[in-house]
Image 1 (tube, rainbow, N blue to C red):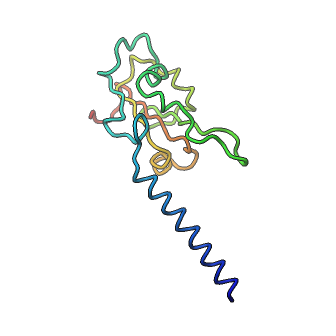
Image 2 (tube, rainbow, N blue to C red; image 1 turned 60 degrees about the vertical axis):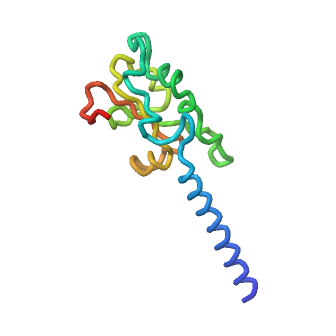
Image 3 (cartoon, helix red, strand yellow; image 1 turned 90 degrees about the horizontal axis):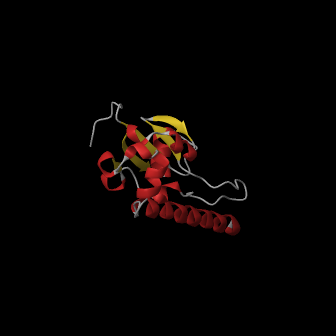
Length: 143
C-alpha cells in the first residue's frame, strides 16, 4: 500500500504542476506582438499605408512579425513547428503562407488568436494559433 500511495501522490503532484503551468500561461496574456484579438493586438485599415502595394503577409510582417513565427519548435513525435492557421471572414483559408494571396486593399482588420483561443473557437489543429483577416466586405461589426 505504501508504494501505491506514493505513486498516487506523485501523480497528483504532477497533475497540479501541469494545471498550475496552464493557469499561469493563460493569466500571462499575449505580451508584445502576440496575444489575443484585443484592440492593442489588431492591425486596422487605418494603420495600413498604401494597401494596394501590399498583401496580408507583408502587412503582418511589418506590424506584428511575431505572429509569423512558430509557436512551438516541434517535438519528437511531431517534428514540425506549429504556425498560425489563416482565416478570412471566419472561414479557414489555409496555412500561414496563404496570407500572400490576400490583397491589402481588401483588408479591414487583422487579429491574432492564441492557440487556446483558436482551439476553443475552431477545434484541434491550432497549436500555432490563428490569424484572422477581416475584409471590407465582411458582415463583422466594426470595432
